[in-house]
Length: 249
Image (tube, rainbow, N blue to C red; front, side, top):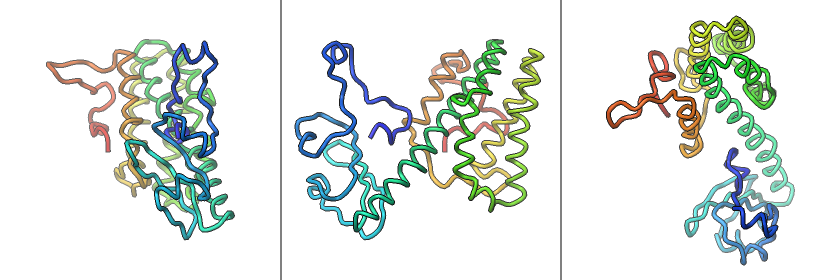
């Protein structure tokens, strides 16, 4: 199930590594009985877990259920073909897309930090890296059929975002112009708000992100000294101010 969390490793300690006890990713329902787990993806319906949960499916389905403090994501369907259809959707669309989305999001936050620290070369590399801000290329390829149906207003927002991130901001970084780079970064962040929160254009995002994962961006911001403590409150105005003052969803 850590795959479904998109950013988290399965987690094991030094002693596990020393004793070659790295947890297996793929196990049967029989093997699972002797394992301590918190999150799990169950593919198919012919297993003891689905039977214990009493689940029935009449169409391709990806569903998360809670049981005994565990999160179980079930990939099901009325027959083998439907299970495979749901599995392909989970792997190719949800996991593939979200992995790229979070790489992009967390890299975008780190980009603000590099600019703040005056590390312009690192910031430029992060924009151009396929593992950094440019990881969104995969997302846009997956979303392209939907994007083609968008209004001209939404397409204009995307074009503006791309021009800022891949044209104007790199120029400012190459010139080592911190003030201009911060200004452009904030402009790019506003385009994120436009699509995700529906600011001035129809809202594109159809679901709320998991708070436990989304909140990791604050740790990245803190590591660059972007989050200030005022009294007993954390201040996030380095990023969240003016048009982007709303925090969370």
